[in-house]
Length: 129
View 1 (cartoon, rainbow, N blue to C red):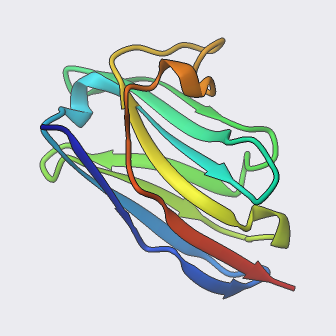
View 2 (view 1 turned 45 degrees about the horizontal axis):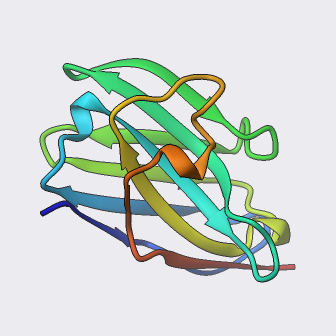
View 3 (view 1 turned 90 degrees about the vertical axis):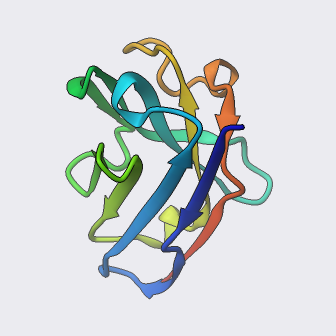
């Protein structure tokens, strides 16, 4: 059974950092496409970042334009855990953050919620101004 469990969310002031973690079981982070998505009330779920890895080698990482230069996606293959380091947070980064897994993604699909088979329950991030 595949399980994705996010943690690390919380409340932070604008400009501050947070690091989200996603502990994965029943699925191999080192040979998959792993993504972070977020959703705010009244808005659609949007892709934040994703990484495509095969045999432990990172083939590609993808970022939404709104987070480039501020967020970094990474993984620890030994721990089978995905991370999202978020720096210089802005109030518009507020939302529920989800990690997701699928077998394959590319530049045209990494932020498409429909291609991800497995989802975590989410962790809330609130950024105050």
